[in-house]
Length: 249
Image 1: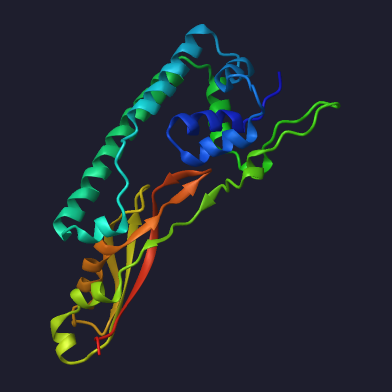
Image 2: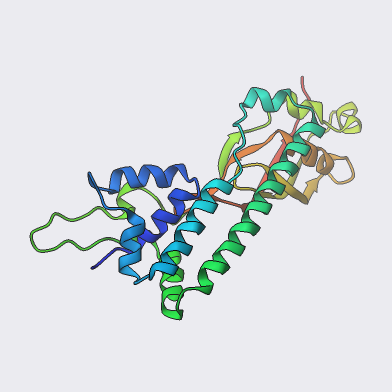
C-alpha cells in the first residue's frame, strides 16, 4: 500500500494542535477518508504493540499542549510591564514542560520501533513539502500534495503588534529627551512559538551612552510577532529589531 510520507507529518501536527495542519487535512483528505493513523500503521508495518504506543503518544501530545486564552492587543497594552514579563515567563515554562514530556513520550515510542521504522519517521518529519505527494493510480485523479495547500517548509516571523509613538515616548531616555537628541538602537531577540519576544540583547546603539539601548529593551515588552512556522507548525526563532527614537514635538 503506497502512502505519501507527509501523511505521517500531518497526523502528528494535527494532534499536536496545529490550526494550519487541521486546515490542511480538511483540504487534502477526500470525503470518508480512512483513519490516517491506520494508514500509517499499514504503511510502516506497525504491529499491535507499536500501534498502541503510537496512539498513546498522539493522545498524550493532543492533551498536553498548553491551552492559554488568546489576548487582544488592547489587553496586552493594558498590562503593566511586570505582568507582561510574568505572562511571557509562565507561557514559556508551560511550553518547555510540555515539550520535555513530548520528547520523553517520543523516546518511549521509538523504543518499540525497529531501526528502519525510526528512520522512516525521521525522514517523514524532515522532507520538504514541495517534493511530497501521494501518487495516483492510472485511473485515479491526482491527490493534492501538502504544497497545494500553502504550507511552506518555513516562514519567518512577522509583526503582529508594534510599539506606537506613545510607547516610544514613554521609554524615551530622559537626558536625550531634555537635549532633544534622536537615537537608534538595534537588538536581537528570540521569538517563542506564540510570538512573544524574550532574551533581547543590544547589538548597537547610536549615540552611545544616551540610554537608547535600554529604552529599546524596555519597549520590546510592547512587541508581539506572528511566530515563524515550520511545515505550518509555530516554532521559535530569532530576529533583529531596529528601533528609532525621536522626541515628540
